[in-house]
Image 1 (cartoon, rainbow, N blue to C red):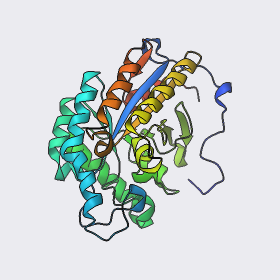
Image 2: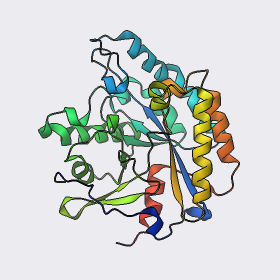
Image 3: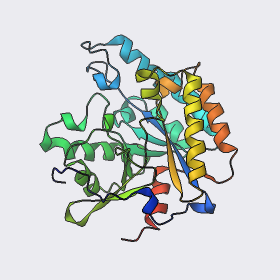
Image 4: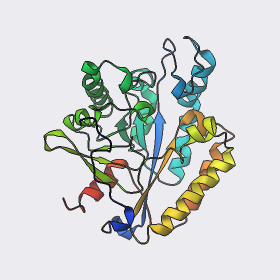
Length: 293
């Protein structure tokens, strides 16, 4: 898209939209997004990813993240299994080569995989413009080769994009993107050459990374944030169906002193009748089947 003052979509106040519905008359779609990431030991961890700014090897920062891939992610899997939740993984494609055991466990659970750059040490707005599409294509192809399914969704590392990212994603067959955290419903973004892509609600707030690393919330406070977010969206969803995203990072929520807070929050959600635990692709498909262009 060309540089502009507003996004490639109309401003549509939520109070003026036609009603959408989810399967089985659910009033809230809940999707859980583990960010399963690979940080190379020989690359500097960006400050935005919680790095210390030290040159490689930044052992303390790196080891904390590696804990998520060695231990935390499997702890998280057990909790999601308990509630029958299929995760939608934001996956760094480098992980396919370095930690294929994680891919194998996720495939046993029929998890969805969406692109999340090659590594979290490299962001799209930091690569040369002429290589951006190659990075996106390589990310998607690597995940497809490892899982047998080409990703339909995308979350940029650090949620970062360039003016060209959306067009590149659409050209590579991506249906939805989660970088734009400005709504509680999906919406369509119109791109070049008559293409379009769905913006899927994600969250900076219901996200363990800023909650723990930026705002220094306790595990119980984060669990309470999830419950409060759910209660309001569930109530409002009775009028017009909404989406709630829960963004997680195994090295954070997978720590022993935090995981039970997530378990309790999901138990609260699961007790409600009109919810739909769904993947990103399922939500995007249900939304696109109802919109009128």
